[in-house]
Image 1: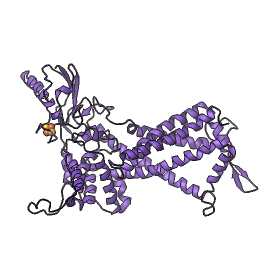
Image 2 (image 1 turned 90 degrees about the vertical axis):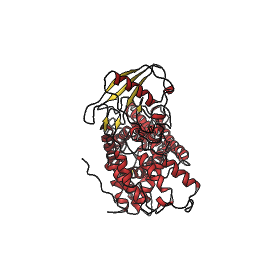
Image 3 (image 1 turned 120 degrees about the vertical axis):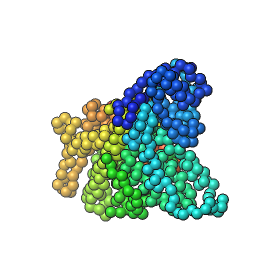
Image 4 (image 1 turned 180 degrees about the horizontal axis):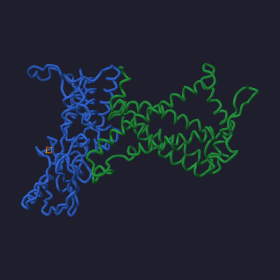
Length: 258
Length: 245
Ligand code: FES
């Protein structure tokens, strides 16, 4: 297959970026999207040009590093898969493919298609844990957990923190990510205890990091490679109302907005 | 400050304010539409309805008391709904503008994956807000949209010490003007779209939605949006085409 690529090139977070067009002439339909980019980069290196910088790690859909906006859709045209799992057979010969980084204030562009998503880490730091001391690994099933709860917790825990939800959200909100992390813990007895304080802390940091505000559009869930449902967001909202009714105050320091 | 009063601080809390005030406003538009159907029962019934609104809650509450309570609640709802929307939108726009391709476009290419209704909330909301102002100046105060002598202000009935309303007359003359009627019709379509997303969204924001109920709540949203929109569309049309004279 032959493809025309329109790729966002940007030297660093300060520089002004632009689209550059590249020709990919030797693309096999069996290649993954990242392999295709590897081939294009090889070409560029041979020509003595700067290769396209893009993020990746596991290349099997579990790390969440490979985050690309492909033809205007996070992780490309297929639903519920990551960019690394996308194959070139999903494109047609002669097609023009536009590749962009995630675009949002809390995701500064480091270079080309690579963004800094440590704002997600700071949301996790605000509440993605339980504060009970757990000691040694407990015996299996010593704390009984109902099957549906375990399932829902696991569904939420499938979130790999890729950031596609923020990229796709017309408001640049990280509500789906935050909600998944919250639901993952709040369905389990160990995580239930602090659920209201946790939601308040994580939302406080979510807001302070400069993420936008959810308007229940559902673009996030539509592009989520793990199919995290909007239900998790409803659960987050419910818990936040509960936190307010209980009169809780956030217990996290808020980074000063700059 | 504690409890619910701290809601305004977080993004989700502002959304909760939107949802609660939205709930009040949805209740109002549904009631308003239903009340207006009395237009089809003729001038007597319709004018009596208008006068009767002043006496709601009688004899427990005095003349216009409940009406004034409703006005205050509605006005505060509009103000809070608008304020939260502005605060939330402003922040979101900052987020998406930061690494955008250009001043108007966030991505070089972006494809919508979900329904269109949610995308119209802001424009629709602003249009509806402007409409409400016009609507009050028009039918309530008779300040715009009428030729001389057409609008009848409430007349004082000295014998019973009450006012006599002829809102029927005002509605009929009001919608004779095709521009005015057209503006009402267009806004009602936007209101329908606004309600379609808003009613469902309200439950989602309050945390009352889940996979089990989402179909039901979407259905409810369609029902409310359709009832209010279709009902309201018939009034200007009925007048304009002479079914109501
Ligand atoms: S590279 Fe790890 S999810 Fe794609």
